[in-house]
Picture 1: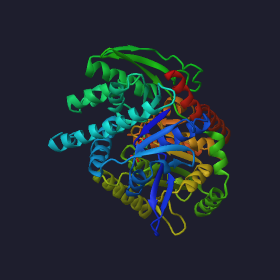
Picture 2 (picture 1 turned 60 degrees about the vertical axis):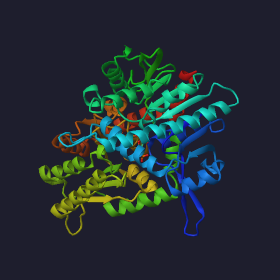
Picture 3 (picture 1 turned 180 degrees about the vertical axis):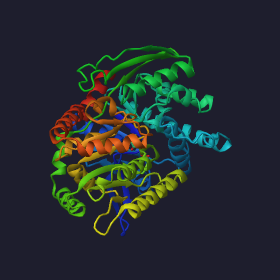
Picture 4 (picture 1 turned 90 degrees about the vertical axis):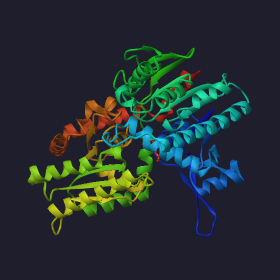
Length: 495
Ligand code: F6P
């Protein structure tokens, strides 16, 4: 089995003495795939192909491609893609154009503007995809028992399925989108040839997977509207083996026939390996952070958010809602603390640097406006600290997850699983997770700051029995969508 993704399960760095250090790759896709492989006991027969992201990764890729292993288990092949090509493909196209499109992030009076610069970046994106497709074809040819199953991940690699099919028509190819998918009117912001190429690329796969039925539906709509492909839609049929939570949340969404090939489009919601997560959260470092956070917040009610400082995560409106809560319900002043962990993300992009600045500014304003000698209303921390995040989930009274748009959102699932207090989840209706968790969360329109402030108040005042009941239901749903099953369902569908 071959897995391909931009970010791999391991990344390397250089220590002060020049020796190599390694750490686990970050992000929802990597953690879902890693736990899926572990649970399905497929580490032995997998090869994970990813891009070398840093100089240290490149050094590994050049000297000893076999040295890269994920957590000492799954073998990894890192592709030494020329830095300029990588930057143009990753920052220029994947992050600045495709990510913005699927998350509806463009400030449309000004952006996007597709000129010669974009055309150069698009050529790099195509070459980057060709590099992956060539490596996959080579590894598929080397596989002991062809045809190989090839799992291609995400928007970075939208062209790779078609390119691979052209050279290895025998391979069984799946593409999985961990992001939302844009509706046709918005998707059509892309230049026409690019819009067609991205769809055509994914339709080179036998299966196209999505985290939520909404995103699969939007993909089908785009195939019809943009390509004029033959699209058949299936209404809410549960997956083979059943996809419990949310009833029709998982399963076949439809099929697309284009250029003589049919691609099955299906939905696989991704949850959390609850036993492993709970065990990790009982370790000493998490205990220590939980004690320190409890001390810092001194028994006050706790509203927690944990995100990358990512435009789609809507941190600014979340902070504005907290401010509105303190303005309109002054009884909460001194009684509540907001812990906002906003880890650095994509700081190569000017929009992200400016956004991060504004988050800091707003946080300062809130503390200046409401803080007192013995109460800091908002604790904003940007240091990426996994054990501390787990600790915050354990002690949260309210978890705020309010993205503008999100493929799924694993924090919304991890929080209730870890909660020791029966935390209330305030959840954006635009997160894929809302399809499975919406019934037991307080669901909000992420653009409506006042409604979000109201939901925070409702969450803070919810009776204990109701909080416990909802939290237990959320945890059960998230645990039922375990990554092992997410992966196993995809593999069995691929045949
Ligand atoms: O949402 C899909 C995803 O692949 C996540 O796994 C990850 O958080 C993000 O997109 C990619 O982030 P990065 O650019 O840091 O690899």
